Length: 357
Ligand SMILES: NC(=O)C1=CN([C@@H]2O[C@H](COP(=O)(O)OP(=O)(O)OC[C@H]3O[C@@H](n4cnc5c(N)ncnc54)[C@H](OP(=O)(O)O)[C@@H]3O)[C@@H](O)[C@H]2O)C=CC1
Ligand SMILES: O=C(CO)COP(=O)(O)O
Image (cartoon, rainbow, N blue to C red; front, side, top):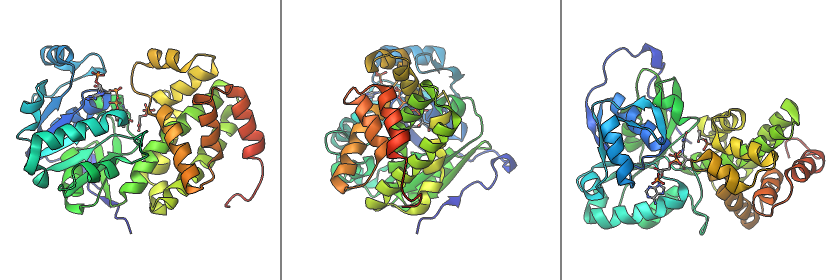
């Protein structure tokens, strides 16, 4: 049974200043790592934001904002910018990793090598959404494999666009972990008047929600880009949720997670708003652009391309029926024309059978 305990009942009612939180290092200075670092600093932590691009980090330090990834959001004074890995990590007790899924393994390996025995007491969280392509592992499975001595893992996920979090707009998020105390501490570290953090113990469900919705958002972009309309979009979202839940249940997730923030919440957000890079990838493909052209135009990570392949392969391995994912896979991996794939999906694949089968 997962606990989705509210840490802040109603963000708007919290009026006291947050108490000083322990220091935390955020690894990955893209749009989401930067927004999370700003949010943690706002909530009272002393934050070190590490990024691998020394020039960008030095520019960030001078300007006190991330012009490349999140230009509209300035840094609170208690957010420190750091380009030196050892200085950022060597003494850190709490680390939040926010790099794309293709970089997650490398970062964990580097952490293991830098921290050595200190891994046992590390409090580790991540905000990465996606499967590792080569192995099909979810982030928490990789963490268990690469940092087995660490007892404090948590994934931070949910419907959260970086730009809105950076701007301080109201947001709700889920922190899922196998150690409820660490999840609660991580949730508290994020909490402010406008930022609600819930906890859950269902890491599998929360991570599957975050990974699969990225691929489905490409599908929603394809359908909208081809002009199929609002009815088709919601059919895709609703049946997509069914597919996501089927895969999740087959992998041991809890059903209720899929109607929560990291399930339906993130899926609807990403499929319906053009802030989503995955949705924009679908729109661009529908307009005739190639994946490379669209990726260059978007200029940030589009996790759904890899996720379409990883989810398709995982579904095959587990014998889970995922017709929407299959058509998205056909477009982004096999190069099938978007119109052929979406028409096949809407007329044939989703065209018959029991709704709740
Ligand atoms: N943006 C959002 O609104 C949200 C994103 N997420 C998830 O957060 C994760 C990160 O995405 P996001 O920040 O948006 O992506 P961006 O494309 O905005 O930034 C990616 C960042 O990761 C860095 N990076 C890439 N490879 C490595 C590596 N090997 N080692 C260290 N740093 C690396 C990039 O550095 P460089 O600039 O040098 O390439 C860049 O700073 C993704 O899994 C995404 O799905 C989750 C919720 C919301
Ligand atoms: O994960 C996200 C929102 O929750 C960001 O979505 P995109 O990666 O599609 O921009």
